[in-house]
Image (cartoon, rainbow, N blue to C red):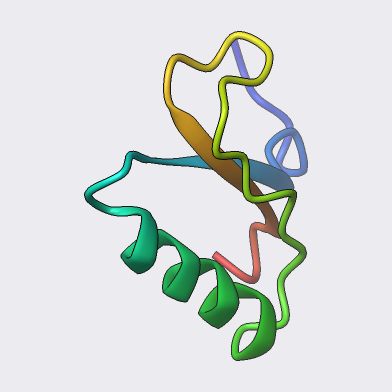
Length: 65
């Protein structure tokens, strides 16, 4: 099977954290948003959807990766 070149042009990443890594995760989220200019989702300090840990999400293109 051949994958078209643009098949994976957009990516999403879920970053997981807990009480012990919450401060680092908040700093990382800020950096992703303000220094890299990438969109970030809510800073979830509760379980959301199928995720088994606290999390936030970011999205980026193949070029930004």
